[in-house]
Image (tube, rainbow, N blue to C red; front, side, top):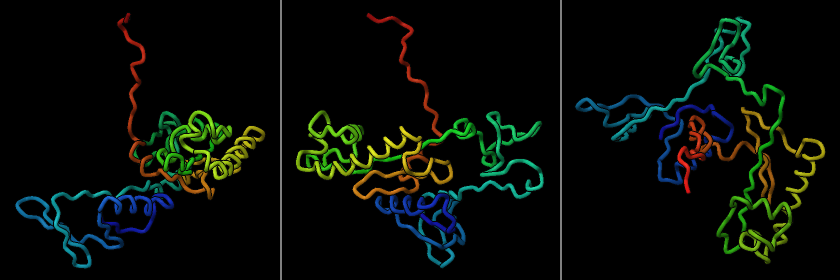
Length: 234
């Protein structure tokens, strides 16, 4: 993988993605450009970098990303943010529509002034030798303090209740504050920064830690599940 530029798509995302690839055996070449593709018999067989390095290749994927170009519209009186701001029908102004990467599509929740808060429970539960780690449903026993019931004994274990109580205190404080004032104690979610409260032994607020997964799924359309059958069953 060759990364030329230094402008991050999202703060922290390049490091996150880079580490993910490195962990899977991908060699990263940072800050060096591509001089040319080397062809043979009508196909690319290597990539030559600006520093003279030659990388043999069976397949080359070019993924340069995109940035909405809106400078030429600066005097148009259109609303410009992360692209041309549109309504739910992609209309930017009467008789003017925007589509594709340049369009900043209307979000009903944020457009209506609503607020959302994002959190992730990242505490690696130590019960059973760390078998379940930060598993689904772990926030239940932590919130209600039921360390000795249901999921509690398996995920937490009696010898780790002191550490669990610290997480319980964090979560209860946030939930109580949210119920009383609508503010759990960290910045509201916005689609640019995606700030996330991390509940862990050392709590923090950071950019969304699962950005790689989010980007993998962001354009996927989930079909409705066939919960109702047209044919009655006995």
